[in-house]
Image 1 (spheres, rainbow, N blue to C red):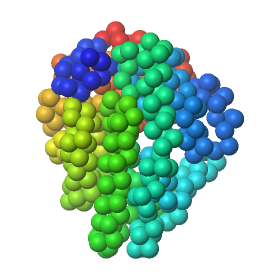
Image 2 (cartoon, one colour):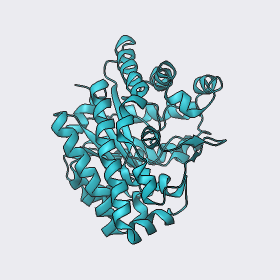
Image 3 (cartoon, rainbow, N blue to C red):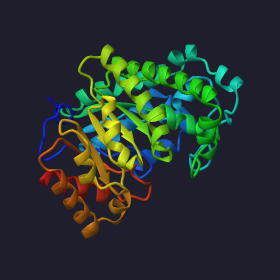
Image 4 (cartoon, rainbow, N blue to C red):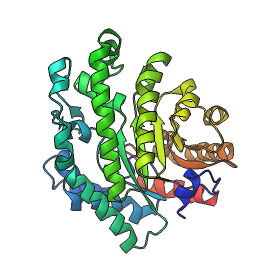
Length: 343
């Protein structure tokens, strides 16, 4: 069995499997070469041959234990018919969803057709991994979790604190609940389609989970995650799911009750403290600072060593606490992998 799958099955594999969030992307010159020939980011995500090539690039270069589908968490609202564009620098811009008409306009019936190219990417990557001899590399599919996707839809893009989204959740709970319901059901279908196309692991990215109060976290992060995981496991027996409730802090242990097989830990959390909150059969994933990877050298080595020592003896997936940043030297990634694989 592949090392990542063994770890998500509760085995303390050592050295741990390793992959990096945003491992495919702007820090790699081979990605830049492809991106320069594509008119926009959405076109790249929906052109299967190119998206598959980008997904495979870091596997060829580094031999990670997992390939993760090259896409974006906002392709789901795009598939629902909500507007989406990426401005210069590839930041998302969406119409602000602030009323009942905006929720009613979302059309789950169009999702399957719009994401069909993404499913073809999954199939191409799965076939490519096999054809190129990466037999121990697992394929991860993913979606943005409902709350985080709702944040971008309500705000119309990124935000420091997602105040409009949080205010809507309090002052218009029925409206916000309808939006979350649509996104939860669509997430199940989207992730299930990825599993059918060949994804071996699924991941829920709740990048802004930590902006919520504990009561709202339970309602809008844990409850949807539990529904999604239960539905997926009913359809795809034995399929592991990783949840990443970024910035969750002390709520991370409670998040683990959602039925996930692995929990991603962000850079700002003490992973040893998180380990004390999470059952030992659930894998932890994380949480090297992406800027330590940029710095490289002794700083990166020291942080990596501390992380490995803290996690030895339990199911653990080495990763970053957030995604690879564009200024990351590719050679630092190679040095990191060498250290992790030495245990």
